[in-house]
Length: 189
Image (tube, rainbow, N blue to C red; front, top):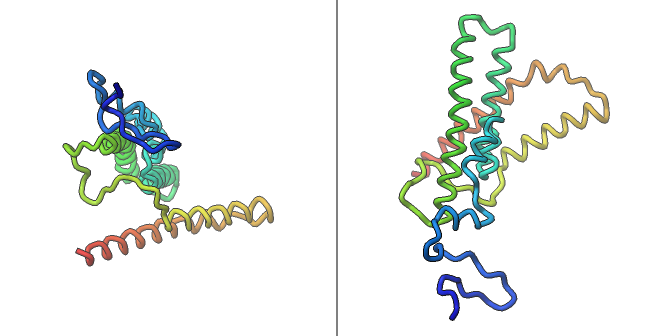
């Protein structure tokens, strides 16, 4: 007698993962057999390097935002131009954000795995979507610009001192882009 839990498939095609676990198998064990499964513990451990856990789960934009925020805070704390009275605030915020990054990676991987099982008991916060296979225009442009700058330095020995003065422009452009996206999404409602 055939296993009633298997999903029927066409000859020559790989059968799909059954939609529910076999009798007696815990859902978590069943889910771990799916190649799309994302380990919440691994996502959390990877987030010791800010953003890496989110990237592992597939939330690339959030991962890059996390690394930019932490790197920006480290840069501000190391810069002599920042007043000594602001440094404790920046340090406490950096520690908070770093821990938020760890918790967020665990939470996102858990939501992702629940979506794989088709469980809808917990909903993603408003504005959140599960990662898909779509790209990011902003991320692609940023990587191309960074690659061109690095290549011009390594191949053509173009000095990089200007980058030390102009890096805040990237933060301004990112903020403008995020504001633009917020305005466009509100006008669609």
